[in-house]
Length: 183
Ligand code: FNR
Image 1 (cartoon, helix red, strand yellow):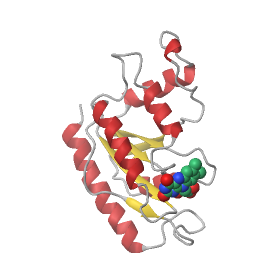
Image 2: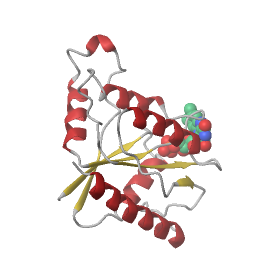
Image 3: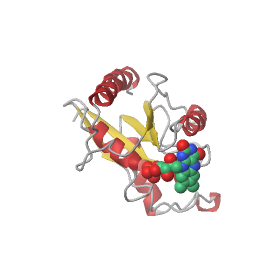
């Protein structure tokens, strides 16, 4: 495809609702966009001592991010912030200083929670970090999904047609965002 999007899910949980949301969203992408979920569960805890000898998993993540035209983050909220695994991935691929993989990659953010304010605070913290990393992050529409019983069907599709329509609209805006900021 012409546009390759790296999708980073902020949960390592097998039955993650955020991974389900990411997979449902990907199905709404246009034909000239391809999507790849990146592995972040095998990264070491970031340690600056390793900057001159980064683990293979970090080298891989950095090359996958650098190869991508754009980014999509789909994250849960842990204790009113982004999960440590996501911050760890951001930190690992941002170093050594001057070699950050994230720079300039247009990004979109979504999140799903079982709670009512659906990852709003996690997303805001993520926006803070992405601003510093020089990642142009789409501001609107915001996506705060509350997942209740029956939100996904047995094959992982979203059951509410209004929600699918909303996400389709998000994807259309995101596609424009990527095309505008693609380098
Ligand atoms: C949570 N959860 C949660 N939810 C929320 O809306 N705000 C929060 O601050 C937290 N904090 C939190 C901390 C920790 C350590 C856990 C494990 C969970 C609940 C969270 O929304 C729920 O577990 C989701 O299912 C997590 O997303 P995944 O893993 O299903 O994608």
